[in-house]
Length: 238
Length: 374
Ligand SMILES: [Zn+2]
Image (cartoon, rainbow over all chains, first blue to last red):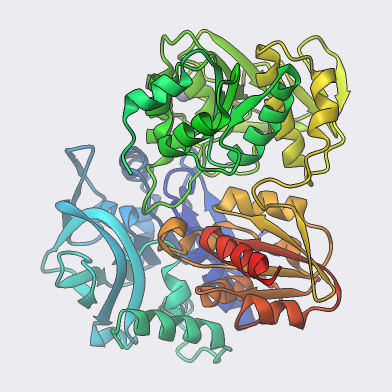
C-alpha cells in the first residue's frame, strides 16, 4: 500500500544507470529522512516501466555509453522526468546522468541530444579524469567543501541558465576549473557513486528542498565527518 | 618483467592445458581442477594466484615436463595466454564489476572473450547462469554449460548482444533468464547442483563433501569436475581428492593466535563480498578495507554490498579506508566497532573463532603479519 504522505525517492533506471555504489545516494537519503521521522518510499524504476512524475526526489546515476544513450532516449520518450522537473521536483544527477540532463552529450564518438533540463553541453575530454575531486561549493547553496571521487571522460560547458556547483580545488570536474552544475532544484555532479556519503550536508539540502522543512533535526554524523576529514586531508584541500 | 611470448608457448608445448578465468573464484577453481586432473598424473599449475603470463611461465618451468597444466588467467590476459598456450579447455566462471578505475568495463570484457574464442578448436566450460559469460562462450561450437549460479545481477541487466533488457525468473531453485528482445537466453545446463551434490551430464549425482566452506565452492567444484571430465577424468575419481583441499593461497585456513582461531577470506569486489558472507560461520567478524593500487582507489563499491547479513553479530572494522566502511555500515543498520589495527582487533575479540574478510592489499598485509608471528 502507498503511503500518500511518504517522501518518494525514485532511482531512475537502475538497469541502465548504475555503476559503482550509485545505490548509496538512495540509501543515504532514505536513511537520513528516516532518522528525522519522515516516512520514506524508495522506488527503483526500470527502463521498461513508466517513470512516475509525482515523486519528490529523482536520482540519476552513472553508466556506460550504450546504456547512457538508451536512458536518454527512453526518458525523452517517457516525459515523466520533464514533468517532474517543471513542477520543481528535486533531481540529483551524477556522472552519465549529469550529462544526459544537459542539452547534448557524446557517447561512442557520436553526439546525442540530452533532456535539456540543465543548461550544460558535454563533450569528450582528451584524457579520462580519475581520482579525488574537491571543490568549494557555490555560496548560494550554503554547503561545506564538496569531496568525491571522479571517473569520467567527459567535459561539460555551462550555459547562462546553470551555475557551477563548485570551484575545483582538486581534480577535474567540468573542465579543471568548475565542477558540476545546478539550477532550481536540480544538481548535477561528476563526483560519482555515493557522493552523499562524503557530503551529508548536500543530502540534507536535497531533503530540505523536497520536504520544505527549513530546519531538519541534527543527526549523528560522526562517521561522515571522519570520512570527510580524512579524504580532504588526503588531498590537502581542507 | 617482460616475458618473451615464445617462452610461454615453448613451455606450454606438448601439454594438455586448461585455462580458468573469471572475476571471482579463479584461484579456488584452478586448485580444485588441478587436484581433479591430478588423477591422471602430475599437473603444472599457478596455484598461488600468479595469473599473468610471467606467473604462467614460471609455474610451467618449475613443474618440469607434465602431461597436463591448469592455469588461472586474469580476465584481461585471456587472448594473450590463449594464443601462447593453445589450450584444450577454457573455463569461464563469471564476469562482474571489479575495480572500475583499473579494469575494463564488464561488457567490453565479455566482447574481448567472445572475439578471442570465436572459431577456436577449444572446448569451453561456462557458467550458464551468467548472461555475460553465456554470450562470450556462444561464439564457440563446443560448450559444457554448468549451472554455477550468480549472486550478483547488477552487471547483466542489459543484453550484451542487442542492448535489450534481461529478465530473470526464479524457477525450481535456480534463476532462469532470457533477453526480452533477442534470442539470448540461459542454455540448458549439462552440469547442475543439488545442495552439496553435483549432477553430471549422464545424470549421475556426486556428493561433494568439500572442506572448503560455502555453496559457492560447490559451484566451483562443479566447474572443476566439468573441466576434468574433458581430460577423461571421471567425477567419482576426482571427488574424494578435491574433498581434501582445506586452504587455497592462504584463504580459508584457520590460524591460531592468542587463543583465537582466525580464518581469512579474500573479497575483491561486491560479488566476492556476497560470496564471503555465504561462507563465514556465525562468529565475530572483522572487515578490513584498503584502497591501494591493487584494490582500486575508489571505495564507492561499498554501497553495492548489502552488509545486512552481518546484523546481530559482533562486527569490527579496520584498514586504511575503514571510515568509508563505517559510513556504509551506519546507513546499513549494522552495529560495529572501529579498531586501529588487525592486531588490536584480535585482542578485542573473545577467545574462539574470528572470521576476517579483507580486500586484496589488506588481506596480503594480514597474511604477512600472521606469517611473521609464526
Ligand atoms: Zn538481446
